[in-house]
Length: 502
Image (cartoon, rainbow, N blue to C red; front, side):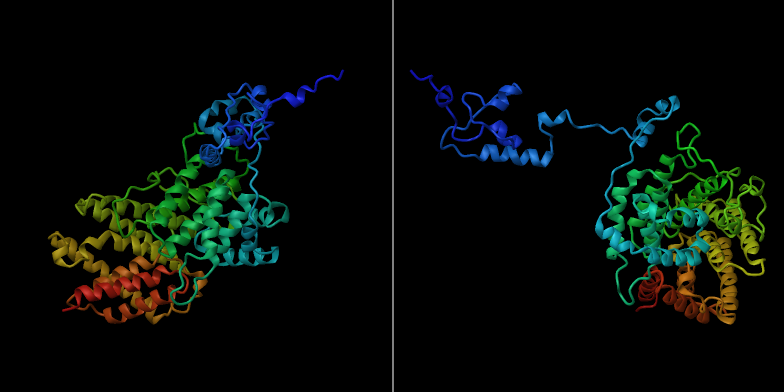
């Protein structure tokens, strides 16, 4: 007598159960409950023969959309608690010793590496950056950059790659004609930034600043305004210029301390300048205080030399011997005061107006009173001075019937700048022969405003025609470097149509 084969008596379903289908697991189709559901104590349900599988299909699609791991896989998922998360959720844990925090495992996309180029291309791009842009916006340590980040061993780090990409972006000229500054490189770096920002590194912040500067210089709005606000938040998260209670990674050298200080000032400069034509929007950064420290000598810092006794604060007298970047920081602080006064309209106190005028004039004198005046620094101050008097440079019907003395003072400042432009830009040709790579976007607002004021004036001031032509030629020249120069030219054409048309 043969032993009965029990396996042959097991009844099987015609298709997998709904639970196994949803989890994309092999089902043995055993009735009334398959082995997998029995093992994991799940309800096992089969569709009746001939029933449509739409319900199971919808379940599959929902699972794929929400990406919920199967129950049997959940035990394998590891929750990574990284340094930034601890800093925000419970920074007190950091005071109890070193915590092992794994670095983010970000694979750098191939197309990003392709945009970056080889090591020789990186070195060439870095040379262009430090030879030109760095001269008027020095917030990246030249010595640390060459000592560390150009080494092949660092090119697997997302934050290093992001910074190298941003340097390539800011040194890339726009295509001639009407080429959009929103290039494939720009889109690639904006997308990669979203992936690399979790590296929680000052290099990511420096890259974000270069992206913001690119957007500002090429008139990419509102992206420029929003990007600068993001830089401010990222700096606060890193503990830069934040409260002493905010935990951060320890900085062990004076060069690093100086670099963090310069990064913060760079944010302030962009945060103020991005609103120069439209006062009223709140700043992303607080106003600097008189005891805030200024950047040290630019040449020494480039060599990696920072001494604590070389540091000065905002209360120090402005002189032509200050570093160029320190004077620019001073000008940005004053521009912030100017824009703040007009945040609620042009109802500014006479004494405040006079004090801001005197301080800006003093700063202009300090910038001019050196053997080799810096054009970018001077034009930033010009832009701040023009911003102070912009409401009174408007036609009478748009000036809200303002005080006649202010209108006269505005005209005097307009003539003062006009004469200096005529002497320097036209007679001495100090602008037209400049290398476009050396140009900053700081002077574009003042050039646009001065041209517009002269065009609207019924009585042409001396040299007005020559200055308008020179400044328009200058905007056209800058357009080869910064596309916002061409945008200002089109805005001037619109003004002509409005004020000079029939």
